[in-house]
Image 1 (tube, helix red, strand yellow):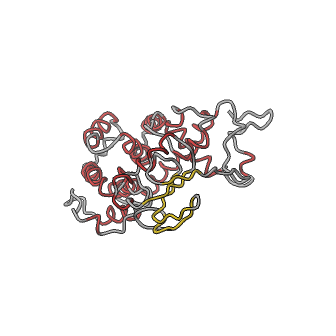
Image 2 (image 1 turned 135 degrees about the vertical axis):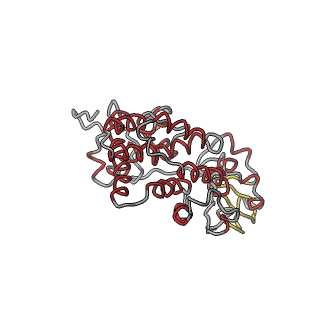
Image 3 (image 1 turned 90 degrees about the vertical axis):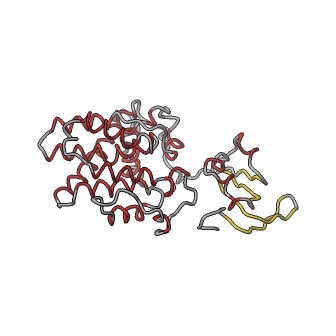
Length: 313
């Protein structure tokens, strides 16, 4: 198997219907991933002669070469799909989400108390999000060594200074396509105002001005969810402004993504609607459930399950 850039299996030889074929093999869960990941425009994939797929779809016929559809077998270890969910799973998940919110606020509080520079902490947190998918440490290294007082631009050769992982990554998430957003983050955080936690309109206005032209709705929402809203809430707590803390938590609970997370969509689309699966508190609640209850034995006491006459909703 190929662990580097390019098809999943290189220079393979295989037998189909009595004929020996030679070439590269690519594995997809869905046929559309071939186009979604830009493989049809990448010369590294020109020798792909076989696609191994996890499901049947209309897009299968558009793939070049041979195709094999695998019927994925279920097992006793399959992830729970909440076939016995409570009547109001969204309410339970929103309660779960509050734990995630408290953890993020506490993260920034802890760093403030340890003397970590606020701007540096914000940049590190944002850059780690830019690197989700395997490049977190490389982006964090850039944030940690960057002098924000003198440098607002990333070195044009920065992408060659690290061992970036791009295999299977969406084009928009690749390092070279994150440069403009990264530079906008440097400027925005360098000009960070302590007044933001008190004047939410000022923060949202400046946030939109800095990022609307260099990023999509999804990544902006991820930054608000995991970095900026919790950081602002932390500053409000430090100032003793608990009304401000409540404001930022309420704003956080209203956030919505333009997409869902594939992992949860596959598992819970029969229980939660498409709209619910794009709601930040629902997704954060699912993450909390996944980490706290989706374990051997813990699953049996999950509050999302209907335990006889007990209704956790």
